[in-house]
Image (tube, rainbow, N blue to C red; front, side):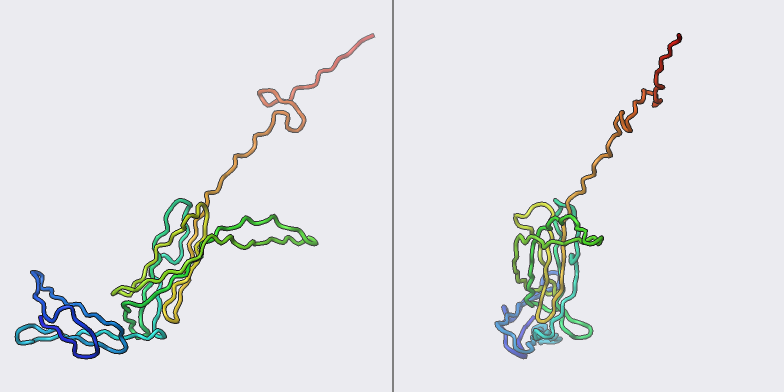
Length: 220
């Protein structure tokens, strides 16, 4: 196979390659900064027939779009690991094309829910309050999309233990998507109280029958 850049600027790792036992041949195109379309021809040697044209197209940031793929909403028990959060970067065409090498920024805030104070009665109206969460950490991570347009983040709670909430956004160009992950502490159920034998101020025997009061009589 013979390879040649026929449009735009780029460098090929090899101008020719020999197909393997499966018929695959490859050469890598390196682009320092893409400002427009780059096209590469791949032709069968030695006559350079037939040929196939491969294109790399620059996508402006304003045309980038994000699609949710997996993990945008998760609720797990404490102790289990969150699944990766994955998004796909595409252009604004119809149908959309996956974008390779787009920078996706993940903003992540890890917090711990604060216990709610007891409700307050004001003039017969019960008022409940939702306290602000306790921020444990905040971070920003940039990931490049792959050939399928996928960018993946593996959520981490860091040193935080117990019930936590991870809130964040993924952004590429002018497009953004939220995600929310939460780990819940187990609910502790208390056993019902056992009635006392003296409940109600009366004494009962083993058969549950209240003894009759004893009376004395005298005769004159």
